[in-house]
Image (cartoon, one colour):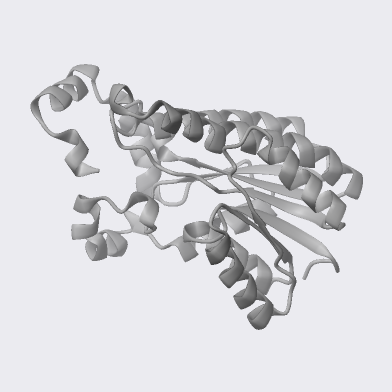
Length: 266
């Protein structure tokens, strides 16, 4: 159980794995700061948490792609007197198109949401957590960080940045009361990555462990975070994919783009 008035911040909390983080931490006794652009869904989750777990669950409805989003979240928590012990940078979205076909605004948004705002939130909260003598940060990367592939490449590129700065922060925080953990997920059964081909064989993939439920993903990640591990890669197959991906030749990827509708797979 956590201390009284101790909070966990979860970005992208209204749905998917973020919702699972929020519910599981609330069950442990943490107050949950629900940060999401979808204020209505976040408020519904807030009411559910209050009723089921009897802990506070304030909502910060904000677009985390804004340049001052990290400052707004930090200032809101400080002014409200929240003792923030956990920060989970979970919010994200997926682009499945060639860079030349992608709306420039979408490119700016995915960089801000996956890279800039989470990094600045870490920068703001780590000193505060050190003053409070305890803190946990969980950043979300992906096995796509090893996939410099067309169509999903921008998602992977931003997740590679997350993996890099998170590992740096983990080293910088060693010996302090703050830890930084990176969760590196493969395919998780959420609306974010429900590709047509994947959904066709969803039950089989879940049975084989190639697709995991968001509840399991959140459980594994929180367990690694509380153990202050540097990173989590759940499952042997995900580790195998990471080894294989860099060996896929450029000529094959180029051929698939020119000769097939690669986007249809996503």
